[in-house]
Image (cartoon, rainbow, N blue to C red; front, side, top):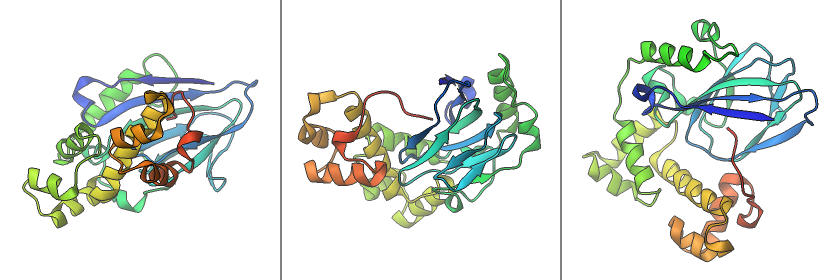
Length: 250
């Protein structure tokens, strides 16, 4: 399996994390690839000859473009031989800069997405990243305050109460709730919880602190070992001891 990431133009990096390509050949053995809770949104196309499945339910047909909303729980997608996927991974709040969509309606879902102009440039060649840069630079139109807010959550590694976050941006908690639901597809409490989980996930994958889960829990902002275990189970479907090292997809 070949999985490659391309960094977008600097003018897009506040909104787009990266472009990605996933390819398998005829010798690849079909496997279910686990996906953990994530605040990002993806647009991707199946350019292969096989029909993949998301959670054994949604079919990802060849030639079709899909949008995967932010996820609040674990799921999986099956990877098959002779597959080719091209995707765009948007940071939290990044998609509304280019598309006006109700993100809260597609949380934990993958839906078919129509954009004939985008589909025309999604071909596998060395100019793909440049074409995507040009496409999204020209499409960029809407502006929101969410990038600054989500950046602060990341800087605090998810260890910040919603009330404190609201105060820092001179908003009521109710307004902050609306901003997150509109631009990130979920409320600020859920968003903060997932960012904190991802921090713990990286530590577990790197075997940081040499497997001392209580130390991982405190470093990631959890009250104790039980709190860490509960949150990791909620967002990954696994216990902390089951998290294996290595990169994640997408």
